Structures are given as C-alpha cells and as structure tokens.
Image 1 (cartoon, one colour):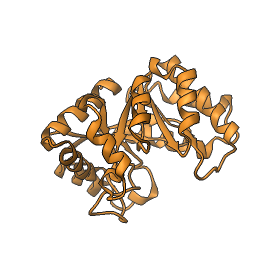
Image 2: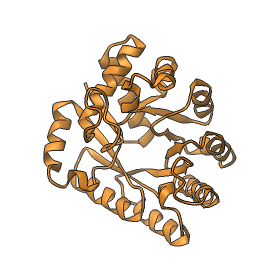
Image 3: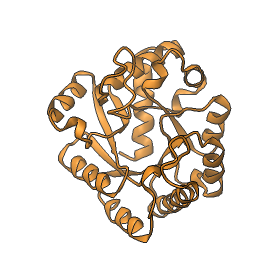
Image 4: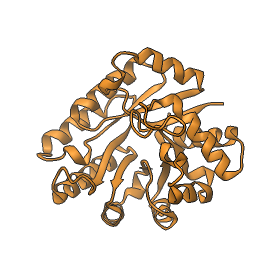
Length: 255
C-alpha cells in the first residue's frame, strides 16, 4: 500500500527539531509521496529546496490569500522561475479566505485570478484554498477556466452540491483530518458520495490533526488515519482508498 499526502507544510518551524523523525514516520505509515505547499515566495523557495533534497517530496509554489497584499509582477516572475524546477508539480496555495480577511477581498481576487492565469501558462494544476468564500471561488474558477489546468480543492469544506460544481470544473476534492471530526457531517457526506477517482487525501500539516490526535501537531504520516476514516465511510478497504487516491495524485501531478 502506498499513500500520498497532497498538502503539507514541512518547511514550517514546527518541524525544525525532528524533520528526519517525521519522514521516518511517513515510511512507517506507508506514506510514499508528499507535496510541500508554498504560501508565499519564501516558503515556495523552501519547498523547492526541500523537494530537491528528498526523493519522495514534491513542491507547489504560490501565494496564499493571507499574503497577497502588495502582490504584483515581481511575485509572478518569482513564481515563474521557481516553477521551472522539475520537482514543482502545482501552483498553490492560492485562493480566497473570507474567514480571517487578512487581506482586502479585491486584492485576494486579483491575485487568485493572476495566479490561475500563470498556472494555465505553465501547464500546472492549481491547489485552491477556500474558506467562507464558496460563491466567489466558484465564480472565479469558472471565469478563469480552471478546467484547463485542473487541480485540487484543498481541505474541502463545502457540501455535495458544491463538490459537484468543483468536479464539473476539473477539480479533485481533497479531504484531510476534518473528515474524522464527529461534527463534520457535510465533509463526511461528500466523502461517502464522491467517486474514488475524484478523491485525494491530505493532512495540511502541521494543522488539523485527525482523530484521535486532534489538537496535536499534524504530520504526513497521519494521512493513514484519514484514509482509514474514508474507507469506513465508503465501506471499502483502506487499500482501495490508498490505491485510488495515490493514483489520482500521481496522474494530476504528472509524477
């Protein structure tokens, strides 16, 4: 069995003391692939460096909606250069966040659109962050033709109706630790309904640890707990969930 964590932030200071141990626990839990996701230019550079130095780690480069104040051509040029590395497999984490609203919404929308355009130019899938911005995210992905690039709706938080709209726009649905939470009824419903060939697994490490490790630092090895939960919801084996979600990620990222 091989598992794929499609979204982690192993460059964060949370792993400074035990990075090698974290990778060891990946192997223990049969997590063979990890995409380390940039949230600004600095972390995108770190992601590329980490991917170069670790065979099972790949990189995504992008600017998160929290960090797009001042987003301009310099950011686009930097992302373009970073994306030339052969281990960069996606453009992200990009999108909209209306929960914290750390950046004015019009600036978030502008940066989101421009990074989707860059992804189309580079032929890379996108990794989309969406928090409390369902309507605007759906409008932008349709207007900017995200179906041309494909990609991921990261840490999916919508209902089945929204999931279907994402699938119609060539986006795969990624579920993480929240699917294991007792009150996550919409995400669990989506996990039950969605075809296995449209599903991905993630951790969003160091955030959102799954049960029974909720409240502790998350890490990619915990994606196995997500896979086990999804298998239970779908009434299939964890091996089948692992096979399809890993196959889907490898195909999307062209690994």
